[in-house]
Image 1 (cartoon, rainbow, N blue to C red):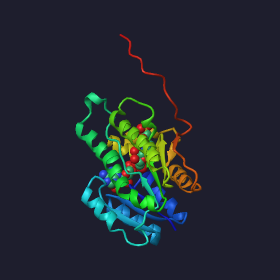
Image 2 (cartoon, protein in one colour):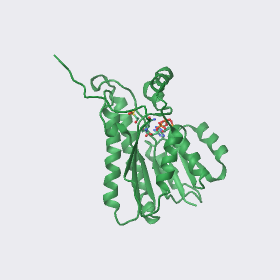
Image 3 (cartoon, rainbow, N blue to C red):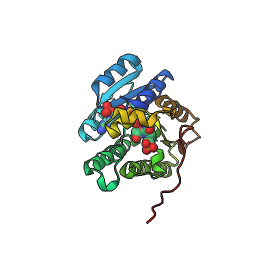
Amino acid sequence: MPTALITGATAGIGEAAARAFVEAGWHVVGTGRRADRLEALASELGERFHAARFDVRDEAARDGALDALPAPFAEIDLLINNAGLALGLEPAQDAKLSNWTTMIDTNISALVSITHKLLPQLIARKGAIINLSSVAANYPYPGGNVYGATKAFVRQFSLNLRSDLIGTGVRVCSIEPGMVETEFSLVRTGSQEASDKLYAGVDPMTAEDIARTMLWVAEQPPHLNINSLELMPVNQAWSPFLVHRE
Ligand code: NDP
Ligand code: 8X3
């Protein structure tokens, strides 16, 4: 059975993906910082799930955990780069620099480091990579500043990987969701009330919607690559341009 490594499996999309892939018969390595969440998932999912606890920004912990994966989890067929976050919705001129660097370190630097480390075995196994980008990569919005830019990096990195990996059999997909109700907005705003308000009445996508889509992408026949996939709830669409009048 193939093995998927899913970063950020302690909540939201990654947690739902861990369940979906285990239920579909895959072995899954799930990562995250919160040990209690990983332990709960391990006892729920059983022997086909392996928990690897590390902060994706911590090079030594990250490489140590990836180098120490036990059989049958040691060879990765599918890397799902899901761990990520947005911090803040302030306009750029009011944003905290530390929020920007945290997003860049997590959404970009850690993602490319994990990808770089696992690429040799993904090539050897004709594996696949699914990267979690966002609609924020494709459409600017007020307060999206660095978060959207990190997700644009993820999308373009995914497409550029396709160019370099041609002939290796490795497939790469950029998944670009709109509103998915998870802990994402709680992390972004620090307020459960603000998060609940954002999703109220929208009938947003669920983590399970995205997990099911990722499983569908992963289980396409080996000759077929889904380059990118943008998803939104039916109740989300685009706005007109902002116009400032003097
Ligand atoms: P959640 O906040 O629910 O989950 C985020 C996951 O990322 C958690 O498991 C968290 O684990 C992990 N994570 C964050 N920072 C780190 C870190 N430094 N080290 C290790 N793990 C980390 O959000 P979602 O499930 O919604 O988000 C998953 C991905 O989907 C993100 O990349 C997000 O940008 C993207 N996305 C989300 C959308 C949405 O509307 N929800 C829409 C489009 C894209 P822990 O805290 O335990 O470390
Ligand atoms: C999360 C979706 O629209 O809040 O990536 O940026 S959005």
